[in-house]
Length: 153
Image (cartoon, rainbow, N blue to C red; front, side):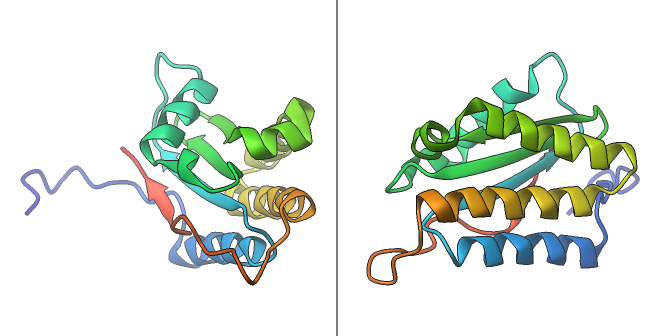
C-alpha cells in the first residue's frame, strides 16, 4: 500500500528500453563468466559517484563472483552522475583507462539524451572485455547475479 500516491517514482526508461538494456546484459553475459549489473537512481548527493558505485557494488554482493569479474554501471539520472565500478579480477585485466573511456562514451550519449543507447553500447563494450579476459566455460560457468536493472530512490 502506498501512503503517498502523489509521489510517483519517475520512470527513466520506457518498458521497451528497459527490455533492450536487460537483453544487452544477457547477450553480453552469454559469452563470458563475468557479470554486469546496472543500478539507476535519481540522486547522488554529497558523494562522488564512484564512491557510491563502490558502496552499491558491495551491498549488492557483487564481490562474491568466483573470478571477481563483476562490473556495476551506476547512474544518478537527475544529478547527471555516472560511474563504472569493477571487481579486481577484471579491473586488473583492462585497467583504469578502459573504464574512463567507457564513462566518457556514456556521458557523450547522455548529453544528447540517448540514455538506453549509451547503456547498450557500454554494456557491449564491457561484455567484450569480459569475454576476452573471462570467456564462457560451459562446464563451470553459471549466471551468478541477476540481469535485471536495479532501481534505487
